[in-house]
Length: 375
Image (cartoon, rainbow, N blue to C red; front, top):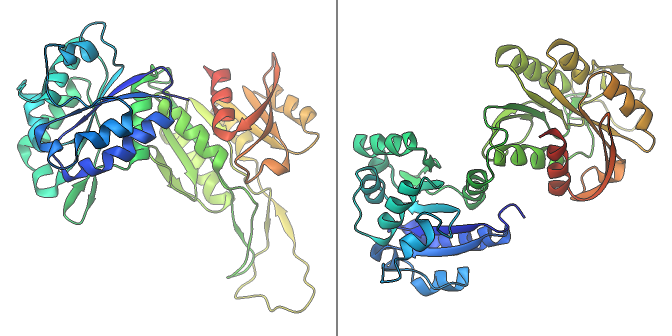
């Protein structure tokens, strides 16, 4: 679990989004964190402190006592690894930016900033408040101090708190040491769909779970992540591509125009494209379909741009072809079998020039093992 052994202070302020913090506390604990809640009086008027005591398994802090809780957790040598202020109101944002210290949450923030420990702020308020020039300037000021600001979702005239998955991902990123900081990671993910006619497509059973696990793991490790696929993952840049041709254009464009440090070809990119028919092919009669081979995107990327490359080989006897990929310049080749496609877990063989490792587990566990070979 990515937050195992970490203590997160979950600081809650007086936004209606405070009602979401019970679920947030549970989400952090599911990732292995010890969670200590701290609340302002305004927050305690929205959600009872006992609710967070229940969610965290620890007594919620609602005032600073003679135990100097802010120092115990966020002072020099304190127990906390992260101060997560979620939700954070315009009032609290501006107080922190000005060094004002008159609630338990702002006292924790002052102490954490003085110590230099990771701080993540998650704004939530009405959109008009979020657009106030002073609030925006104060957010920029917090960022200039190294505080991570998780952008809200602008909906229905409100700057709504980010979803819990996004908040947890930022929390994980904040405490994992940023070993991929400054690295540009490009990942292809999921299935392609090659049109046969105006209705039908030729595709695979790939769901993109492996690509998702790899992309989110890279984000947690501090990378700038771009994913080319037909879906949408949180916390990364998503470039939409449905066909192999669209995927090729997007990948080569990113490599050419932006540069890539690490390329991971996790998508089930089409090897063939059918000759497309106009309209809808009538049913009821036998049909022959001509399949034309498509260029190998990974070969073009390795030959022209030479990033550190991870390749995937799907099949029961792919070791020889995997070794050929390593000889051609791939850093890692991951061999798996068709039953893993679309499954949440499976068995994989991770191959480098120096060693071969067998691993069975969830795709998140496999993604972590792949990244461990690259770091």
